[in-house]
Length: 266
Length: 373
Image (tube, rainbow over the protein chains, first blue to last red):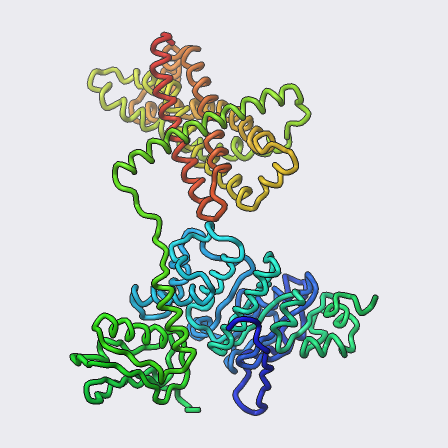
């Protein structure tokens, strides 16, 4: 449980079940401005998948499209083969139940205690009674190392604690897929490494698929089974694969430069 | 892998004195789940053994169920054997058990006496903070008189437009309707004595001395005071105020003074305008319902009001404007750094402004009476 265990690369079995997430020909726009185009990739169940790239390359935009906060201009997003882009209200709700999202700042509801924050998805989507919800909340907070903080308000917590509480909320319904937007942003290296350990631990316990948007090299190397790298100029994916292999052998110099912090060039 | 996922199962099989509970199927927290009390029924076993039978997938709901069984066993003094369960389930159930013991007590509600004491000290601190803030504003304003070039005139002008010109429609409507209502209410009594014409006196005097300033003050409290509190509260939540302070710029000088001056200058103008519309509202009722010609109403109005009434209105309007601006800005700067904090600040700004207006109005009533104005 302690220390970062070896990450195992999930090898997809071709011809079996559809991938956990399948993105095909996705185009993201803000008004008339195309941010990303021709985005195609697949994430297998249980995989730790990173979306990487420099600032302003559209990582967060891609994430917002994946979780349905923005509508793609073109292309489809499928979850286990089910079309999310064209889903009706009920189908969409059912798919949303299977996601958890950890926002950059935790995005906890500030007028609610941690208990209420984590319990809200349970109230919405389960038939558990108050006591049973309380037990799940206690378990989730314990999983992220915040046991006993049920009655605290987000404003009373530090940045790292808020992020962990946000993760507890994202995990409330034991989602099949958890999305992370810059999980290490604003955290010190030690807290950031603990969060990485937590991510691995949760994947190991529940086999959760994780999609992480990040540019933290330490986390990328420690966690990622596979990455896609986006680029601002290319408006799309410029590399896909295992981070260490890409750093050593990627054809595109931008990819090597990013993954070696430009040190290879020097 | 089965084509159709089976729901969560918990089947109890008696084995001598013990009860074997086999857990199987797919345990999803969002799906229907077995309830321990129903699984148990009327049975009172001497031991419970948890086992696994065709368990496909599971999540926290299974952990919670296991924990509930363990809790029941402990309460009933019965042994519980969970060794047959997957190691992860047992580990999580232990984690849950520890978390439940670790629960930190919530801040306890104080008893009545302590509540009264806390409220009293709270009131004292609020008064002190208000006085501090007024003092700080005065000091900043006097500093500004020495260096007028530092004043944010552009901000002040845009605030003047926001809290003055943009407030004209709502002030027009409210003051016209108040004048109208005053005329109707006055007419009920005065008509009985054939003194319809004195409706003009009632409307003009009460509008000038009371209603014009108070109504405008209340409208501005809701419109501008809340906006000030929300703006400054949001700036505080976004660390914009900290950024000013670390640059050595006093937030009071930079943010509060332009707003304070804008509202102090605009409120008298709005109140004078409100007075005119109030009197006009009375005139409409007099002409339409009481058959008093507008010129007669106007002559009666002129005889009933004097410069002293006008000055009462002006003095009140300046003070009310200041109070609303100070309350709005103070509450904004005191706001907690969260969305809920900003909301509370806006509410509190409105409540404080209206309270201060009412208290100040009462003080003025006593004061003007003593001075014979």
